[in-house]
Length: 335
Image (cartoon, rainbow, N blue to C red; front, side, top):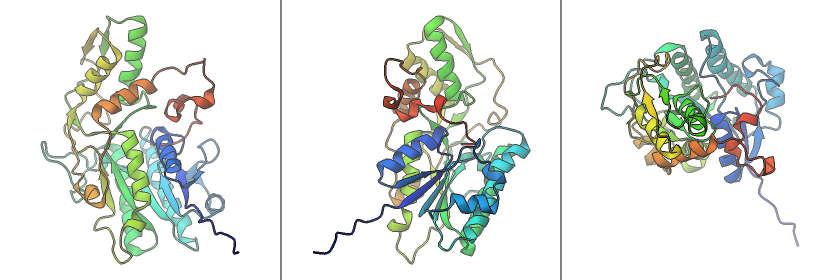
């Protein structure tokens, strides 16, 4: 009787696996049944300065899929362009030397759109007018990838992520900072006043678990699309499709936390996003392909709040959910 052939699981190489979004993608990739190959941390290898030999080692064994969640959201213009653009240049050069082309899923950013008209959901076909070095660096990377996809030197798709929300979020973001301040306040000063900048801007917040689901969905696009078809645009918006005032994030977290103090909006605004008053995604394109958000705004707030809790020392570390391990993960250049 012939031996039974066990189908090989597709290999997915995840760059930026230790970051906020990357950790959630790693969990989703494993849940979907892929063999997960984690890329190096920045302490192990700076991918923006990796040599061809470094990339050759990284791509051996050859992955079927590469998901790039690496990059920087903050830093000097030079740091942002190195982490968000130069890394992509080096990755594409490495892929050109491969015998077979893996499918590439790159995490872009809504910051690539820049200023958008109020009350109008922005589609993938909208012109990009990024504001600031971060948005420009992400847009330049998308342009480079789109050119490579069109030329046939690479295969893949760019996911334009709007405002992710969930467990493990950095205090450098408004939601992460709000969770951190509220966590401290409810423990030591429940009637205090918490200072924020103006919270009247509108953003399209999406649960980070939905972002992870979208990354896995995009990884499987070659199997969902007919062999003779291609995406009209190599870019897909990933968002909830709804705009909310940033104030709702802080107020919603305060309610979840049981905070009874005051919220002030007199502090300085964020230099990276304060100039953008409105962002809302048109997500019809990715919905037509088969993905839609699963988690609600309240789900995301609860996940963010539970993930901001300090680890429970009464339980072994291996039993803690992956999203609560962000503070203990290796430091990495990630989104």
